[in-house]
Length: 149
Image (cartoon, rainbow, N blue to C red; front, side):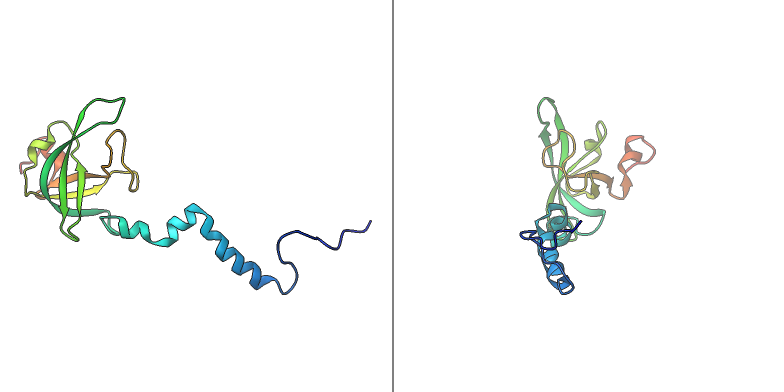
């Protein structure tokens, strides 16, 4: 049996001299892949208000209530925070029942991500961060009444 020697219309260059051409084409074609593009463009880093860090300090500008998405009906307690490192303003969720009472305007708070790598969580639209500390004291310790502000 004789194998077909010619592959007309196979679409890709073949042979000993084809390595450079294949490599160049792969380099161009990878940018069509959404995951590859997201990893390598660098815009994720630029548009992230926290920069490259996991936590950031900021000053509380105001307390806000954000309405939950359908089908839930609630007012989620959040704060507007201006980050110290770059002056960007973000909305941060205040966890636990009544913890908003421990936060005053112009307080220094420590903010971290909300756990979905830059996506909003659950039924809170547009909120990608949560408050962890207030004036250097853990919000959880204040909530459990182990420490005072």
